[in-house]
Length: 575
Ligand code: 9PG
Image (cartoon, rainbow, N blue to C red; front, top):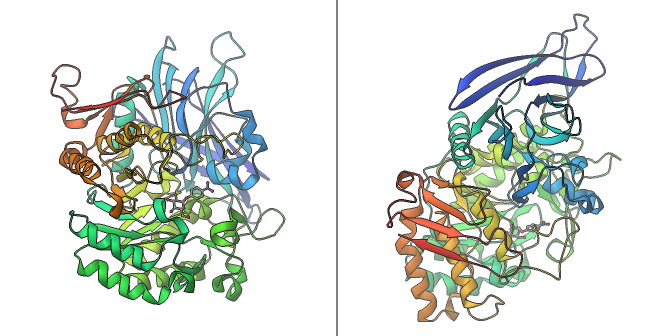
């Protein structure tokens, strides 16, 4: 890549940038640091962002949102979804690293894969992304701007390293997360980039990819301990490894160690014992960085909550049915909050929970006011929160992230949700968020994102494609759609978590489960997409990539649920 151009934005004053460019893989690694060059002791500067302009001008890119539920898909670089500007602020702040860019620019948070616009003739595909997420959030975005060619209307790729206003003392220097840029075959550079991220961020990518069961997508908030016990008994006869209790048990959002009387929380200890006695791992859902204004934690410590621009508590999610209203964001730059998190997860671990689905993690990195924001970027804020949670539960606990900015969790989580919520229906028409049709629960959306993020599996972590729903009662999925769902999930190697009432299964359902269990191991490897911009997405295990396309018996998942707007068009697995 030629001519990266770097500028730093600070207020007030000046920031100096320095960059080192070294060859890496088939591309370049760019290490950037910023420094306050002032020599006068009172001239602190606030670093807002560092922007790097690349001389690349793509027309077609892979839009990629910053967290598990955000959209991933091919999109024209000059076609942002304008309706996103009408979405409530918290929705934009939940789904984008930079909520003010929503609906104004097409963005690749963490990385942007482009189908064209790179290389000397501008026809090559390319990728630009951050190799780690320890220091700052990174967004790559095509913006109108100067091109080396005559067409002044052209776009350039800008990479924005978000420093969020941290203050630098005179002479103080900060390293940013390194960037990577490469041109070449789009499937190839996608896999190579993720390999490099895994290495740079010391990914935990060798945990198991279990068969399990989760309460959520059949029982939702109405689950009772007896339902969990009934499913545990059935699951134990079919080789399940995990039983995970989802949102339902807590006395209030944020109070994870006291229980909801309506759930019969008194039986939580009994549940752990029952699940463990049947040889499975007891799993629990929590949202560590959220708390209800009515929770004991917020009442005892109102100063643990982040604030918004108007100095009101920062509203991170609106859920009137589940949580009685707003979930507020906790301030993970506050050492007392970090200590609280360590204690909470140590206590859950002591109670016997060994598998944790931690959810709504973006809250710790949302734009907002934090007590030590002059020292810590938003990336560092969530990273400290995740580290505290991991420390509390211990290295041996199985940790699954959800609703999580991706780059910040590499090296901490064992598994990561890579899709929006699934549902027992193909695509949702009734419930729509303006500008975010793909974030509303549906099987189609979950499968789309799962397919396009398949190469993350066993590179960054174990992928969680969200639950498998194959029941034939209380569903709007046709038998064919259920098979497509199970097929894409097994063909992308990740977690197989069923979320039906297992008592409703007949021999057809169990046969389908046996079928996917039999082929899971073939795809539970680093995976490769032959062409991420193709209409039919073809996923092959990395170790049989050379043979792909030649040998008839190459394991391959082919699916084109990605581009169709109506019903599922096609999916197949060949072995
Ligand atoms: C429990 C659920 C389940 C589910 C999670 C998460 O506002 N939102 O956009 C939004 C997205 C996802 C979501 C809830 C709200 O679901 O993904 O598996 O655990 O929480 O409440």
